[in-house]
Length: 282
Image (cartoon, rainbow, N blue to C red; front, side, top):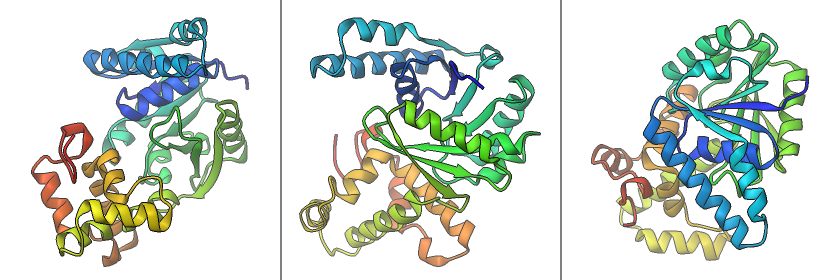
């Protein structure tokens, strides 16, 4: 099956980055979101990102125009009826994703693979909402998508080898490295990352060190490119909390219980970069 047109659903940070990456790789991209304002903001974000590539000499001005020309936006899912591949990147909520996958199952052609950028929700749950569980898989991109080369490709209980090959081939065309993960809570990246972030938050709450001190230790002592608290702010503290809840419930293990400080900050609307305040002020 030749894939030339890709549908991306969700125009937030991840969705816009995914759309940009596919468009830069030569695919025709249709970006869909229920909010016209979000779509307008996403296009502006993509234009700024491409401009940086031009400034750094990694993209020509003509190529920038061509990339934008391959990207269209819409608020109606019906515009995806004839796409060759779908990447879902909406809110990290199992019920919302399940409803969307059920709708997509009746909309796109039977042979089309439906992938999710979920960072923790079981792929089996999404596959069960369709009649094509063999063509449902996870495609977890890292943020910022245009710069990060890793993609976790998650195989659900019924995902076929053919569907996995399609996803791996697409990652190669995007210039990204695909790593297969089993369909377990948090997959690989967040099963390892979120307990570390959670422990760093406990260290703040218990007065072990300031956010700056903790991040400096992890950067200079463990050679991490950024500290866990800076990273948490970047990801979004609400997203971190949601993933920890999935891990806690999925494994029925108290070691994944979110730190009370994280829960309090989210309740207060201190979500990190996107709200201007988290462990740091932006």
